Image (cartoon, rainbow, N blue to C red):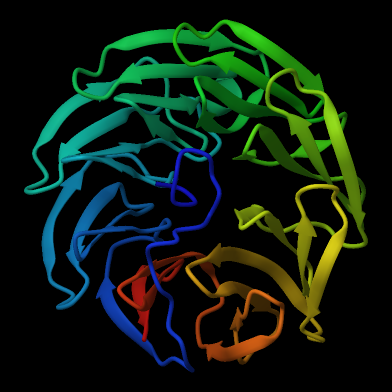
Length: 353
């Protein structure tokens, strides 16, 4: 699932990342550019722009199965028990579907065609929640049957969803930056709050919803809203635009902006530390993640080589190790079994170990 759990925290305390300098190794070459992999039971599940969903053995690099959905897959799949859920469709189009497959052999279970998945999906208690992009709808669909439980129409582009304590949180674009909280049971509006700027996918902690917003060409803001009613608890301004999704771990919010990774105290929004890479020609910061004892992020450089650099930091912000990567278009990383798996736009799944 995107950023590990339904709250989009980006932390998996049960997994370990590599503890020392790593080497980059190709695992599998697919058709089309790849989306973020989901790792489970030594299998990597990921979609491609060629409309293929793959299941690949992470130890051998062998293809276990693939499924062809005939439309580009531009969303991160989600795994719920023995079911994998994925959305398809052109990134900026209206057509597309949501599919489920058996994780063991790729057998299709159902197809949902009432709205294409165009945002981050969250699966909780047997229900999949997702937005339909420019169609402006949020759908709740039963994972077992594919039956629609409810639908909510915002009239605005949906960014992504998070689920926590019986509520579904999501944001809309382009300009209003509205944060919605809906009842997970029936889609009724609990509250909504306008940030009045470009926002990103929410991250939910203990009774708090965290969102990032790029306020202008050079700056950005982090907001903490009370999950119960949307009241803003605190706001923190950063000097650079946030390029990645914030990650929450151990009462700390991590956000990457340009060439700097920030650690923010979730109690009051005060900076705890920041790590500056000192790199020039930064193209963007893609993936930020936290495992049991490591904070890591990828910095894309332009021009290369290297095309990108992976930084691994200790929880106090000191450097653990760095690794230069030959491929810069890395969308996200997935930790598993002491390794990191990277999906690239060149159609290759890489392993760092």
